[in-house]
Every structure is written in structure tokens, then in C-alpha cells.
Length: 180
Image 1 (cartoon, rainbow, N blue to C red):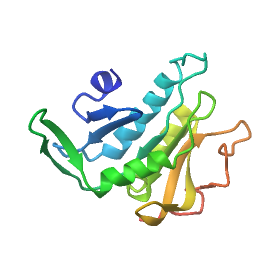
Image 2 (cartoon, rainbow, N blue to C red; image 1 turned 180 degrees about the vertical axis):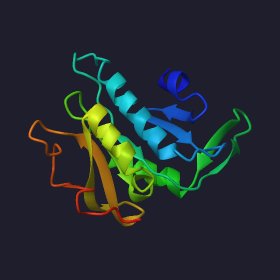
Image 3 (tube, rainbow, N blue to C red; image 1 turned 120 degrees about the horizontal axis):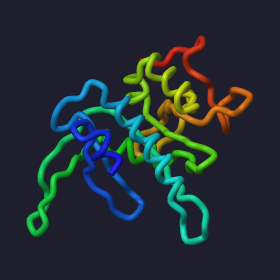
Image 4 (cartoon, rainbow, N blue to C red; image 1 turned 120 degrees about the vertical axis):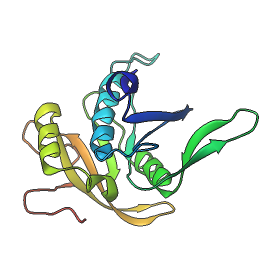
């Protein structure tokens, strides 16, 4: 419902199975603000997931990973044909999700590749920090399976004292520039 209500012509659900949900923006129609739209949608997903209680009474936890770049798209299958996307960008987004910290109701966490991070403007990030209390930071260089070492970035909750939660991460913006 989040994608239908807020991002009807911008983000499309591609598939969901098990504990995996794949959405895409900028395909089939280009969307210059695809990374910003996916970031906003991710925040909405986190907020919605935390309102859903598991059978044990705890809030649902999820991991979010974003990546930007080219994809291949097409119809696959003969018995049950479906439209899907493939490629390194999809694999990288999956790796960002699998290496993300688990988001809980008190700790939101969106992990992204440098490719997605480079698409987010300083004005957008400032707006996100003011409205959602999420701070953009360099997580650091991580060894990503099948990719090697990658610089990755996060949006994570800001503690009352002003530092990002779980911060060995360094904040980007006030002196450190994002590698473009």
C-alpha cells in the first residue's frame, strides 16, 4: 500500500518472497530522483514495519539496502511469466540489505552503496535529518561478497546527543566529501 499510495508512478514492486521485497525506480521510465524516492519509501517501510507485531509481541524488524545503476529488465518464465529486473545493481542492493544492521522501532537503519549515496543532494539529506531525525554517514569500507571492498553509507537515527547510533560511522558533509 505504501508504494501505491505515495509512489504510484515512481517506484514499482517487482517481487517479494520469503523475507525479501524488491522494488525499482527509474525503470521502465527514467526518474532523476530515484534514489531520493527510494530513500523516502524506505523510511515509510521502516515506520510501517515497526507497527506490525510479531507473534511474540515484538515489533517486526527489517533490513534495507539501496543501490543505483543500470539494470536489465524483461519477462521471464513460460508457465508463470513475470516481469523482472537483473544485474549488478540488483545484486548490490541485495548485498546492502544483507549487510545492513537490523532496523528496530528504536533504531532505523538504511544501508546504501556509494552509487545511491551520490544521487542524494545535501538539501535532501538535510530535510531527511530535520523531518525524520536520520543522519547520513559514511559507514566505511566493507568487504562485500562478490563485490570486494566497497565504501558504503547509511541513514541512521540520531541520538539525543547528536551522534549517529552505532557510530563508528563518520558523518559526511561537515568536512568530509562523498566520493563521486
